[in-house]
Length: 283
Ligand code: MN
Image 1 (cartoon, rainbow, N blue to C red):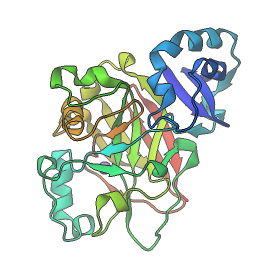
Image 2 (image 1 turned 90 degrees about the horizontal axis):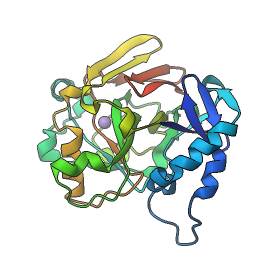
Image 3 (image 1 turned 60 degrees about the vertical axis):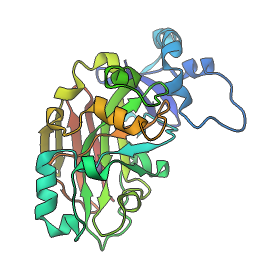
């Protein structure tokens, strides 16, 4: 199942290049009142909502995917966990380029651990990226994003992937500089998720997906998730050994080599096999 959030918070079931408006299924979500849950209500109830989505799809009108204004498929993640330097060749390029490392020691992920991006930085493909500090180098980073489906507290490697609801393409937009990652990568709009959520059962092997990112038609990043230093299951083990992961939490698994600057007017095309393609404009 492929689910998108589009236009004015509509819920869409993506089938090929068409989107069926299944917003009516959201009526089956449990009612909430203050204080609101600190996890994503839709992701938490995805399994029980599936029949309502299928029923709604039968009567749904279909609109072309290209006509939809795509928002982040996850509306309310409690946290965005991100993996730094999780591909060997990216570690090498970061250590070799002073404009990337800025006199920071670029250590292996096993030493640096994980970091958090502010949830306020999250946008969907159609919202684009507004450059906040045009005087500073700002880079694209394409990453496989895993979305947690069920509460995960100190899970074992064997059970880790059972906690994944699905996957989507993530862009970890980054200002280069000496400050903490969480500051440089948490600017409004600097976490892009899309184009839609592909449920875990519909992804054959998340550790064998091709990633491709081009800017203005020129290929910048091309890699495969098989080259992750710490794979998806172990990232979940690692993260959940520090904090409880909740439905809707996003795990950005790290970017491969080929990071490079973007500027207003650029157009990024990002794709990951089985997860679709999204175009993101920079302004
Ligand atoms: Mn990153």
